Image: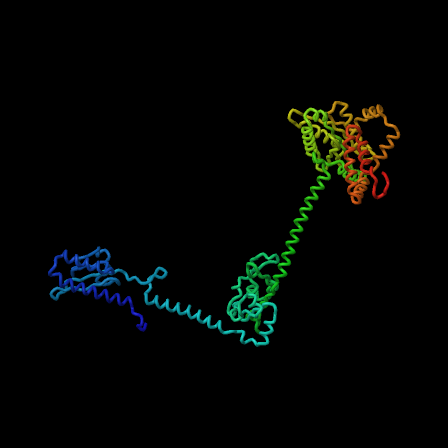
Length: 557
């Protein structure tokens, strides 16, 4: 506006006008001495030497174009009434009379393109200088203001009191810039108090963490206090990485003036790194203990399974079966519930071992137990009673339902197929409705039915109430003496829970003796199978468990 910056556009316009007039004068001087082709070539040379010239033409006063270069007629826009911005018209006279005119079409002036529009270079320069001065002066002013220490207005006694605190302390303004920092915070961050002034606490890369030390997406406490204008307490912030990361418990309190307008806030930093490490160690110990407990529980479950199951077939062993049997017996007697028992025996199993080997016999026992456990109900108990004999206890089951399940088991066993071998089974069924006196009596009744099934041709199910005549006939053939009946009855009356309690007490006082008693009992049962009845095997097992000197009574049982 005052002429300090040259007007580039005006200078270009003046230069173009001068070139146009010079060309017109040259044409008037050369036209009488040169041919048309030479004049046209001269105009082409002028256009080529000046890149801004798009085309040149000479037009007579009548409007006819005499000479032109580079399709001048197609790009020329001026008329007798209007003149385009990038076109010059210079009159040509001959012998003092108007003859025509010289027309020059110029290329548009470049300039600077801003948002798709051409802007004058002097205006662009002005904008650039103004923006540069604004940014530079803002940076300069910020640096100058940073050197003004606001802590100087704080009395020395107050500053000393703040420096005496073991906790880090920051005073922030409304923009969360530090206006005061005590020595504890400066020491923790490794910077001086003067360096911290004017900076923001976000430069230290604080990160909000939870009680487990895991990073969260929560906002920083001073930002939360600024937004909500409320205090925050006990926010955990992690700072630093590598060998010595620190954890701080940060609390912030907004500072308000007498008009209740927030003017800044105070933030305190309590170092709780040691406490967090102790908590982390405790969490690790608890996790390890939990893993160990789960492992022990898993091993105990496995041990319990091994202790209560037959290792070959996976069925219940005799001890766990009798323990559960007496519980079900007591509940059935008390609540008047039905209960049934089934004895199962593989037909001609000795021939399987003799003809196909004990490996095939073991496989038959495994398949047999699997099909029995799959066929009976979920609440029914399947026990490997001894050798090839299995016992099934069916709580809450009448004798009719037990007979139906036994028949299903018989058909399932019959459908088993082995290489060069097929098997069948005989089954005996009895129930509480047949008035057994003791749990062993129920199994004895089922065992006698099993014996009847074998004498009648095997591969069938016999129930107690339908085999009374045959069972009575067999008993008259080998009638026991009164002494034998009293002995059997007394032995059957011995509750298995009492025997288990005595063996448990023995194991607690003298484990080696208890292990010896169990081993003798197993050997006695294995020896008695096939030679004694089920009742006699039961008596033999109890006697073997209690045969040795008992450390609690110091007597022979």
